[in-house]
Length: 122
Image (tube, rainbow, N blue to C red; front, side):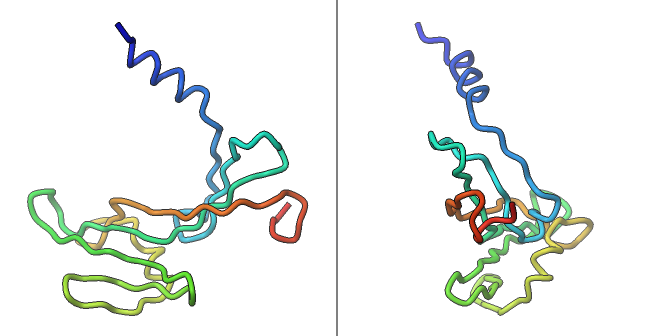
């Protein structure tokens, strides 16, 4: 018989290490080491969507989607049948608290970069 928990733990231990910059939760890029053979390759992750819950309990409240359009870097708020343009500063406030929106699911888009080029901060 297969030991699924032990196999899952071994796979997690072998996964590449990730480090998140402090600003990553605010819409900035998050950098994670790539599993590629070439150590000079890294992956850059950019926040592109957030699903939030607004309300004090799971039994009550409201869900809203916040999505970044890649072609113009504009954020949009999808609230039932209404769609609003929002500033990036509003996305940075989605950490929750009280009756305000709380990030429930964050979606990132990956793009590979090569260290030492103009496309990186190194």
